[in-house]
Image (cartoon, rainbow, N blue to C red):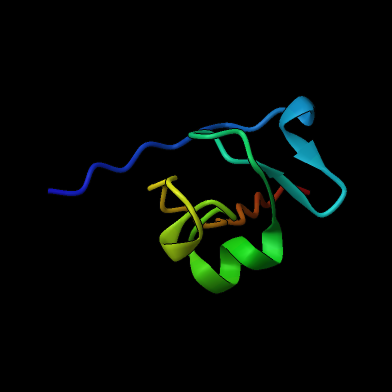
Amino acid sequence: MNVERRVRLTEGDTMESGLRCPECGTYTTFSDIITTGQCRRGGGRGSCEARLRVDVVVENRPE
């Protein structure tokens, strides 16, 4: 069974075009996360098993 865990990122977790993987700490670009669903150390490239995705939350403010 897959377990989903949401992590709220802070400014310290992000860099210009990416973030640190919450599991292994490796810098991963947003485009890599969107394209592969993994951090740079995931899949055949390394030992991190985190599956990542980017959700965009749009909040409509009352006028």
